[in-house]
Image 1 (cartoon, rainbow, N blue to C red):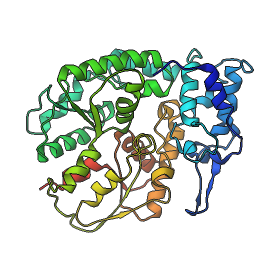
Image 2 (tube, rainbow, N blue to C red):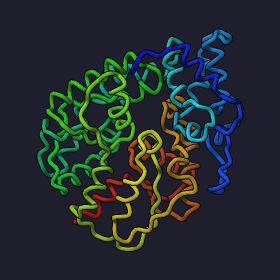
Image 3 (cartoon, rainbow, N blue to C red):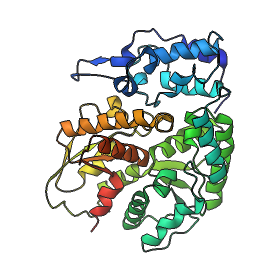
Image 4 (spheres, rainbow, N blue to C red):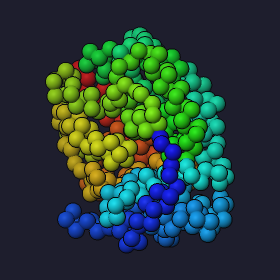
Length: 386
């Protein structure tokens, strides 16, 4: 990532017209209101949506406000979902600017942000787990997976350590599609959360370690199941001046295999109504909208339904931008709101394509005692493999 030009950043922030549509825009042609998931699920103060956060950022950058944890709190009560960017009438990217503000103001103490970075540096993951756990799941797939090869599956911390069914399902699908792949012996964290929360120096050093590990594996293509890993490896690493092989989300791979009929899928026993939650890093950030939907609809006897907000206007699950660590209760409220949207269209399953989203949506479902199933797309496909 290039050095941040402070004057340019301030100039961009001053582009804000203070119109407020980043709070509660009206999409008349689509028949609904709403943009900011934090504002929607909080008391509604000015600083709970982007217009207010920009004013706080400018005051801190220009020295009007003292640089204290209390005064900078609004900067971190945001998922960086990018929904405000989609609707903003000014010629700048509010979400990207806020990420840069966090980086410029990283000298302001923030115990949550600093603790996450320290864990990643020490343990190669934010969960304080032994890094070897990222290959423990291999024992359950029934076949050997090498540590080097032309195709590398980068498992990510959340799936590899918290949701092993995702990585097991992904491995079985790749095997069924006759795609030979490798998994690193000791996989570093991609460092996404460090970039999102402003720890750019630490993230840059970590990124160099990740690229070195990938290069040593001999990979010419990298496959991920985590939307955060996708954005970090595919978009952020090149901005840091690092060369990396082609990076694809597994739904992009599955879109090709489904089209080529390489995967034979059993129909579900009874017709199921499934909806899809767009992960912000996969959809708005990377523009991947169709692949996940086509993969879901490739399962025989599935009825696919869209939630009221979807694709470019999809509401965030609440987990991104460090919010789940910074304010877990707010993150769960946002997730619960998203689950309610799935209920409103009669969905029995809410599928997603990011383990971080899956994890938080499950917490949201528990919050409202919902029996809806939250599942990764790869789990749905793996269950139907013949």
